[in-house]
Length: 323
Image (cartoon, rainbow, N blue to C red):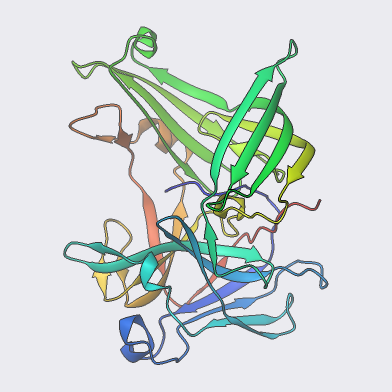
């Protein structure tokens, strides 16, 4: 599973979800305006918070947002109802399956535009004698408007659980790759270095990031924690990477027809909520790997994922950290 956004461990409620209910005419390219997706429950937010649920889908150049109607006593007892599919621009054609859109649940202000572009970014920085990184990050939109942030950052390494193979391959490798899976409280990463004879050195990392701040980042093998020292330029710019993933360990898939994809299970036409379950530490260390024939370092372990079908589930919805 791709790892998105920042992670916070604040638990925000016991939610129920119904997706793609009723008849086929309610979902897909023959959209008629009927209810397609409902999220219901209680969210532990300040009642005065401006944040509301939004469905976010990846597309070329940025992130497309799908709105819904809130009823009830949000953020306590509420229902979030969606009556439209993701935009056509977020759908990708998969041979033998049909058109699919991949997304997630986010918490955002209601005035957030329906499309968040990818800002072009550049960064430079230096480390001081104490190992603290002083970084300047510049993000610009297509019109040349930029925001400039000065950050002070420190790195926290993740736990190295195990190593296999010859460590010298790290310095003299022909292939290297890293793969990761994450939920709200834990992240697993496998980093591999292999030579052309397919001899490999592998490192197994586990990270428990805890609460990440607005400018912190979780990588495969470490957490970078940053504080903002200064910001100038256009402070209204908002990049799709600024969106916090609200439901770690869950993914939305929209399908234009019923299909089966990998280990997800049977996808129904319309919205599908996928839940991921990380392997235990022992399973992670000993799970059989499936590796790319052209790049032996690019490997994956068995993925546990299931389509949630009309049942109540525990979801960590994550608001952006308080300023």
